[in-house]
Every structure is written in structure tokens, then in C-alpha cells.
Length: 583
Image 1 (tube, rainbow, N blue to C red):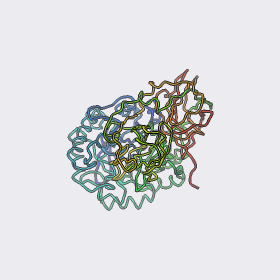
Image 2 (image 1 turned 30 degrees about the horizontal axis):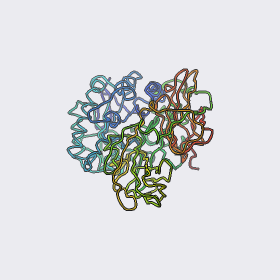
Image 3 (image 1 turned 90 degrees about the horizontal axis):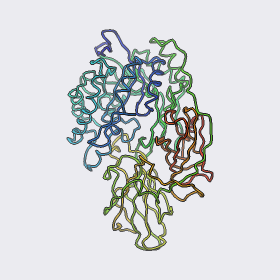
Image 4 (image 1 turned 180 degrees about the vertical axis):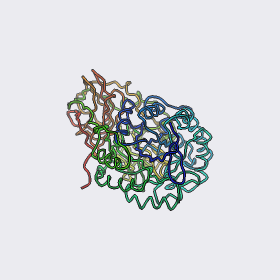
């Protein structure tokens, strides 16, 4: 493939003027069997490039383990992009934000209490060096200089909103070059942060969603010549639990795009196709109040969560056609959906009673954090003995992020980080009763100083003003559920429980799992983690990709942390319910 060049007049590709028409498409938020479909639809909208982040925390879950297969087979994704005739903008981090768990930074970095993320801390840079070597080495054949589709690589991500240490950015750029990246590098920042986040000699780009001419003028003031580009043209937004579903009018977004392209600038839509925060991978924000992101990353994008074109797809294609050739092809049709059905979950396994089958416990003087337990996602179950009967007061310095409290298996209350809750009063029925605290990691903070976000029970934990004599800490990552002893459920259980159903599918297709009447938890189909649900909304359904289903018998497991309705039924429907929108 040809190589991208940057000169005073703009971008060229093999000497000819070139405009990047790109869209965000994160391979790790899309089932790998659906990558080719999404890439084809990007080309049909008129895009010549796709952009993707790289989640360090998934690729390197432990310092000595690196994954590049299955849903993390980035080389295959790049091959599919090239086969579709698309170029690629690669954004490997090390920090990516992306409303992704911890901004993509692996949790094991937080085992050292004083390590400074996104800095020249030698320990952090050594970890980044190792990560980039493991990542870039197999990606070198996919760089444009080697005939691959990767035209350019980003240095860090919106660093100007976090710091101003140019030497740190220079170190990262040096590492990329040392590990073989020979294509142009670029940075991206919001307009107000351009000066802090730019790196001399590296292409600077701006992120915004409106007032394109003004923001591009600010970029031009910083860089008098060279290409104008927005690396994140925000055409939608993400959702958080407890808020409303965010949407943007397609016609208004198309007018903004027209204004941007009329300047001659290049663009990367954020997002072209958002996808899904499967499992426990959503991030969170914390600007004095912790706010976790929902499972869906639909983003009100041109392709919705199921890969179907929205009104924005047609509107954007019409605008792009004014400035560049667009394939002469009809709009893609929505994908086939599974016929609606109701499924009853007839089997049950209680979590507290079966916790020992899900993970080993560690004894210690105090509760251990997830990071100390070498745990990335999921829950931790803490237990200690209550020495006497009567009224008791539990005080927890920091709940990260949501704690359900039980005495001898009976629920006595919930403490939420989001509500700044730290104390709980209850009555102890007998001396020697067991105090159990089930703590959920609802997503590590992905933006700002809050990225140093350790999980579990942090700081002092006091019972009637004194520290208990000892605790057990049991990690529950819930990566495997096949050890659970499911049995027919006669009554709705008290406390957290797994519910199971087996249902038949004749011809797998996309569908959406609706859990009306359920309260909060997670769902899996055939072992694939669909994500979190919560009656708090706005999201009221979970996307089920067709490749997750199989012809014949399928297994559905739902972890309900509180209580389901008496019938314990769920509904598969052909449409999503992402919640009410702002009027």
C-alpha cells in the first residue's frame, strides 16, 4: 500500500493530495466474526480509513502474558481492513480513555501504591516499553512502509487534558520509533489543550463535535502549516447509569460535517460504529462523583450497536459524496434478527453458598484490594467474624465501587461509591455471626487523575470503631461458571444468585436480551459475557451478537445481585431499548 506523507500543504499519498475520511471502529468492542461486515459498511459509507484504539489491559492482562488471538487478533483485523481497501489509524495508547476500563491501562500497574501513571516514572515507562515491543513486533508487516494498511500511529491520547510534560511524550514517540514504527506519528487534543498536548515535529490534531471552523482555526494558530485534521469528530456520546440516553440530531450532525469538510480538513468520526462494552470492560468518570458507563457503546453512531445503518449513515454519506467518491451501492440493509421469544430461567445457584467454587480465599489482617489479589474485573467477597450480638456500625473508608453487606447470608444494606456512602448500621443476631461484604468493580475511572483507581475495600474498615481481627478476601472474576451446582429453583432466593436456562435456536441471528423486572447483575450466553444490566437505566437491553448463539441448545446464565421478578423470565426481542432520551 502507498505511504502517507505530511507536507506544508497537507497530506499526500504517493505524491497525490489525500484527505483522510476515517471512522472509529474498535475491534475489541465487536465480535470478531462481525469485523468484516462492519469494515465493508465503513467503505460503503464513503470512508477510506478506519481508526482503532488498542486496549493494553486486555492484550497484557499480566506482565508476563500477552494475548493476540480470538477477539484480540489485531493482525487479522488489519488484514480484513486491507482486504476491504481501507487504511488504518492506530492508537495504541498506552492510555486510550475510550470510556474503557481504566483507560486501557492494566490494573497490575496499580499494585505499586506510588507508581505514577502517564508519566516519566521509570517503572511506568519500563512497562510501556515492554508492551510496545510485544505489540509492535507482530504489527510491523502491517505498517504502510511494509505494504500494510497502517498509515499513522498516535502518541498517547488527549495528554494535554492531563499534563504538560513534553519530555514524557518525547519518550513515548522514541519508544514507538525504536520498536519499528516508521509511519507518521500524531497527537490529538481538545482545542483548549492543544498547546499542552502537542509534540514538536509530530502532527497535532484536534477533537471536537461542533463549531468546526472555529476549532480548526485554533489548530491552525498552533500549527501555521501542514494538514488540518480532527481525530475525534464527536457525532454522538456515551451513556452512564442513572442518566438518559444521549442522541444527536442526524441533520445537525451532517451540517457540522459539511462545515468541517468544506475547510479541506481530514476527519475521523468518533464513532463510526461504537459496539459494546462486553463483560466488565466499561469505564467510569469521577469528577468529584463516581459515574460508571453503561454496557452499550452504541454512541448514536452511523452504525448502531448491532451494526445496522442509522439515519446518520445516510446523511453522512450524502455529505461525503460532495467532497469524495462514494461507492455506487445501495444503503446496507439491517441484519436479520432472531424471532421474539420468552425464556424461563428454571435453575438456580446462590452466589454466597457457592463462592468457594468460584475462587480461592486469602486470609489477611485487612481486606485486600483487587490489585493485591491480581484481579482485573468482577467482584471480591470479603468475610470476617462478628464477635458479639446487638447493634453494630460498619464504617468503610473507601468503597470501590458498590458493596452489598450481609450478616449470616441475610442482606442488611448497600453502600455505593456513587452516593458517597461509607457507614451502615445493623443488628447482629448472634456472637460469631459472619459479616460478608460483596464488592463490585463497576469500572475503573478512564479520565483525569482518577485513573489511579484501585478496587475493593480501601483504607480502614471499622466495626464499632475497631478493626476486626482478620478478613478473608475471595476474588470472583466470574470468567468461568461451569463449576456452579445449578439445581431447579422452587422459590426466588434471598441474596445474589445465578439463574440458568437452556433454550433452542434453529438459525442464529442477532437479538437483544431484555431483563424487565430484574434489578442488577450480569448475563452470559454460552459462556460469552454480554455485560451488565441495571434497572437504574437508561439501558434496558443487552446486545447478543449472532455468533454467540449456536444452532440447537444454548445456555443463558443471569447473575442477579438482588432479586428477579417471581416468574424469572427474560425476553429476546429484535430491537434494543437504550432508554429515554432528553427532550
